[in-house]
Image 1 (tube, rainbow, N blue to C red):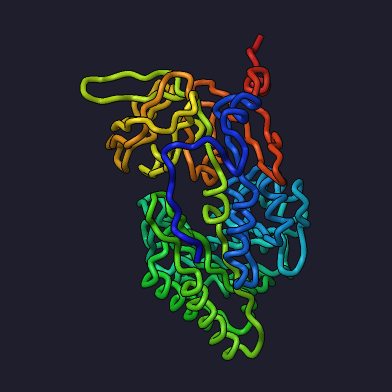
Image 2: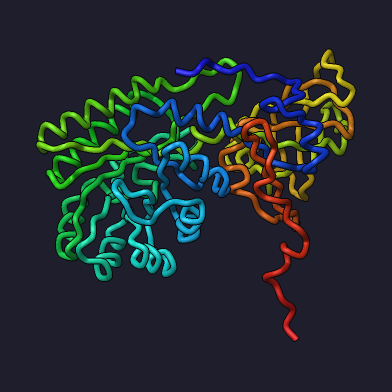
Length: 422
C-alpha cells in the first residue's frame, strides 16, 4: 500500500520541473501531468488480471497512450471516447477486449460504431440488449448489474440503488438473460459498480451480490468486473485504500465461481480517478488579492470551467503557493480561493452544498502562482467554454521533459462551429 501523502502548501517544482518555468512556457491555467505517477498507480493494481482504465476521468490522447503502453485496457462511455481510444493505439477487438463500451443507453452514433467496429458492449439496460441484439446476433456481451444498493463520497457519485439510473436492476437479471438468448447474444461477463469509496463492508456486499448474479447467469460467465471508484487521499494524513484486502475479497469470489463453473474467470478492475488524479496539477496565476469584510480572497485565472469537482461535489483539493521571490517562510492566513467566472459558485474552497470554507495558505501576492493538486481526474475532462473561456493547455512530464499534449484553445477554435445566418 502506498505511503500516505503529505501535501505541501509551498511548491516550486512538479516532478523536478520548475512550476514557474512551466507557467512561463505554457501560460496559465495549465494542467500538468506527471507520467511517473500513472506508472506507479498502474503497478499498484498488478494483482488484477485486467486493469481497465475509465477514459472519462482524463481522456487526453497522451494519457491514454501511456496507460496502453503500461498494459492497461480501457472502458469507454461514448462513441467519441471509443474513437479516442482507437486514436491512442487501442484495437477495437481482442481477447480480453481492449475497448469496452459501457452505458445505459445507445445513441445512434455509439450503436453504429460498436456494431461496425466490433467493440465489446457492457449493457446497462434491457433496451440496450434488444437494440444491440437486432444488429449483432452471435456476439458476446457483458451486463452491468445494479445490486440494489450503492456507496459514494457524494450523492452524485453513488451509482447503485433505486435512485441510480445505472445498471440492470438485480431482480431483472433472469429476464435480461432470456432477452440476450432470444437475440443470439452470449452473456460472457458481469460488471458491478456501486460508486466511489473503499468501505470494505460495502465492497464485501458487492462481492456477495456479484457471486449471486454470476451463479444465476451460469457457466457462460468468463469475466467479472469489480468496477471502479477506488479513492485517493486528497488531504495530508489520509490513507490509501487497502488494495491487498480489496483484491483478496474479489479474488476469493472469483475462485469460488471458478470452482462452480469449472473454468477460469477473469478478474477486472476499472479505475479512473485512482490512476490519474494524483498525476495532475492545475497551475494558475493569482490575479487579485482582496478582503470582503473579514475574509481574504485569492482570485485566480482558473475557474470551474477548468475544475468542476468543487462546485459539483464540494470536493477538496490540496493547494500550494509558488513563491515568486523564492521565500518559503511566509505567514499563513485563512483564504478563500475563487476563480474568474461570473458565478458566485466559482470557488475552489467549498464543501458540498456550496458552503464556503477558508483554507490555510501562505501569504501570496498578485502575479504569483497557485497550484491546485490532485486535479488529473475529472479536471480537463469536464472542462467547458463557460463565459467563453478557452480550454486550458495540458502538459505531460515524461522522462524529464515537459511536452505540450494539448495546446490552449484559441478564439477561432472556440467559435469555428458557429455561424450567423444571412
